[in-house]
Length: 195
Image 1 (cartoon, one colour):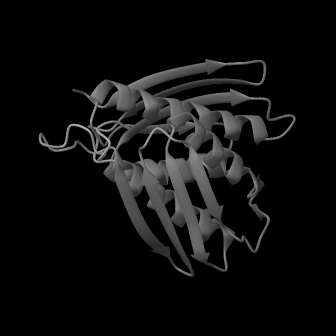
Image 2 (tube, helix red, strand yellow):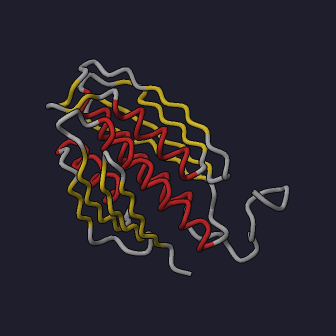
């Protein structure tokens, strides 16, 4: 079963189209109107080894909040669709990634129960013009719509750009691992017999 999904979302605030393919590593094409977000999402897909095509138009004249959050919504829905289509997955994923001064950890449980723990103390409130506080909105939307446990911890860092990029690289690897194909003897990765 192919592990892919296409999701569209159009509201008064955003217009987003996303294509996700966990069985391909290319293409990666991201255009959100928010350059720093494009950069870290590209890093996530590249280091996760999956294809991600994303276009977004949002009310950036207000600020980037709705765009960032709704991209998390759409990406979460794509991963939820992958689970519905593919059935059993490895379930757990984990990665720790360094980037110069920063060290970040991402842990995922594909359990159909949304929960998020996010710890990152950014020393600079902005990376370029991007407000670092918006990353919490992205991660919360992703975990809620994918219905996953998502634990993100930037253990330390001196540069907010490095910290966020390390988090997204770790997230890509953890997601790819968690949504990997389960073995034939592991139809449902739960002792309860169902997620």
